[in-house]
Amino acid sequence: MSARIIDGKTIAAELRGKVGGEVKRLSTQHGIVPGLAVVLVGSNPASEAYVGSKKKMTVEAGMRSFDHRLPETVSQAELMALVNKLNADPAVHGILVQLPLPPQINSQDVLNAIDPAKDVDGFHPINAGRLASGLPALVPCTPLGCIHLAKTVRPSLAGLEAVVVGRSNIVGKPLAQLLLAENATVTVAHSRTADLPAVCRRADLLFAAVGRPEMVRGDWIKPGATVIDVGINRVPGANGKSRLIGDVAFDEAVAVAGAITPVPGGVGPMTIACLLVNTVRAACAIAGLPKPAV
Ligand code: GUN
Image 1 (cartoon, rainbow, N blue to C red):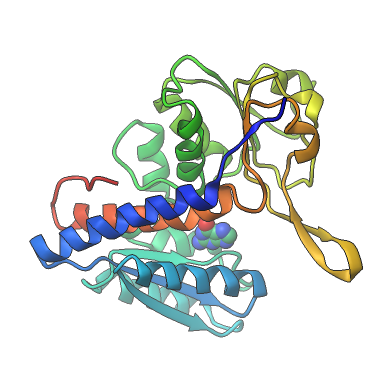
Image 2: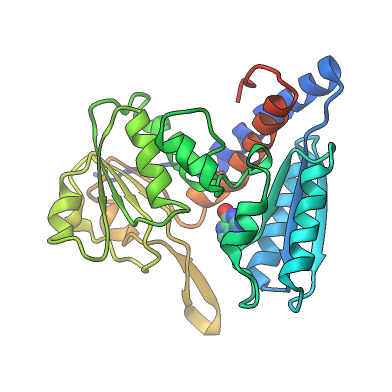
């Protein structure tokens, strides 16, 4: 038997289409065009590529995209000044400062300076706290995408055993909170977890978000489980090229799981789609409108 492959590329395109519909509605009914500002410091090639796709998809969804590029040598004060300007700009509903930032910058101070109402990354402590308290919040995009993908296989997550491998602020912790809100039974495992394979084998829903290539093996997976692979690891490939692999040994896992996300083409495309969702949600909340249909 072979697992169903969860097609993140197609599911993300559908979600972006729904975002486009809501953007049109906001524009015609309320005269609001959601705007997303992206701040890129320096010229990390991976970040450049990510920011380029964000811009393209933002515009395709009918929203405004504001790109801000700052030199690698930018000072904390200059970056803070830009964030404050974007906080005050009524055309900007979402602000994303691309990470990582260079060493002279205190990243947490920058994230803390973003208006929580415009924090479409969901990294501000106010949004993290609101999520953990079960209050309305802007939620980090990658975990949102993971839940969306899991629900394409299991429309209700209630009562399921969910195991999240990884405890980062960007993925593991907010994902655990979202799963709790969906009434799953949640275990957060990490590098110090005893007998990690046995913990993973309990999971009806297994999320791998550790950044270690192919760490999760086929025999760590409960037969029929839904496996969501958040890992994007660049490793040397054939003839000097590099290739992307996940945190799950796909070829082994696909023979055991009930459904699994590929890498690339699984969680990756969902992250930008969810960023667009967050920007529309932020625009509605800022305007005092009801939550949008995405
Ligand atoms: N760098 C890699 N992924 C992300 C993300 O989701 N948000 C931000 N701000 N930076 C990133």
